[in-house]
Image (cartoon, rainbow, N blue to C red):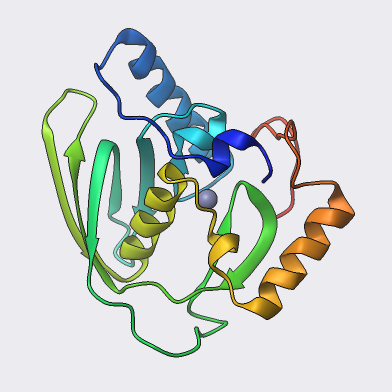
Length: 180
Ligand code: ZN
């Protein structure tokens, strides 16, 4: 949090080059090492519209992929306060914390994969949350930016205490040990 690349709109990928393929391979590795359920390119310092995701459902089926230049549609978000237990999320760019956030329960995402083939995803529940969280990253939005006033204040306090919120801080999953 605080690094400019995390707070700016990421650029479209013009062409899938070897550089992009290497980047995506690195993103999978980083996401798995964290571990996280999603990772957007700006989180590894690259301002491009790419994210990876992974999710294991109750039947142990792994749902996993990358999406480039995504577009996202969602059904309206239910009004009301989010539930602390079932609607809390975290972020590798604000590590070690979780805060409740209301998200839309259903999304449709289109884009392309690393082979340039079309991707079309329609998901609900936790997977819809992952899509919205990662898509936000491509528009320079962190989930902590979307929290209510009380949690926003807590976030600011934590950031201040840890020295976050300014450029240049990073951690390397699999190398730096971070709780949460
Ligand atoms: Zn995140």
